[in-house]
Image (cartoon, rainbow, N blue to C red):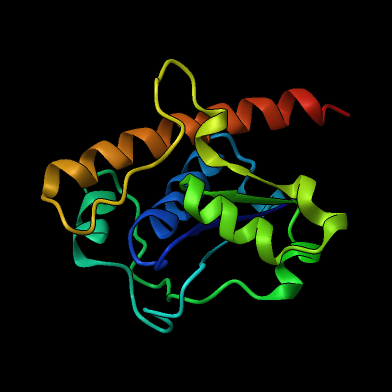
Length: 157
């Protein structure tokens, strides 16, 4: 199973999502069955490491994302990944605009898999303080756990 997380710059939300999802899979012994990556819709931070606040937030929970590097979504991602999960509606629209018609069903909002929350979008914490990164972490953990439950239920063998 291959999962790609996407946000605007690939330095805050999507690398955090990649790290949190990988961590939640590992807790259940499922991490070896997945290929997980993250990417940006923009070119702003190609090659950059995750924002230091994103790294600090995930490290507080034992998740090291320091080795990740920003990259931009490429056309082959749509055929390669089973799921392309956007952090917000703008990223979703950008992905849909460049995705070939035969792969449109692979694209969704990541928070569609969360439970008990009102919002559909992971807010960008880049211009805010630590509280925004903590809130984003909570949303990503919720969505990761929900997505894993759905995957297990839908792919029982």
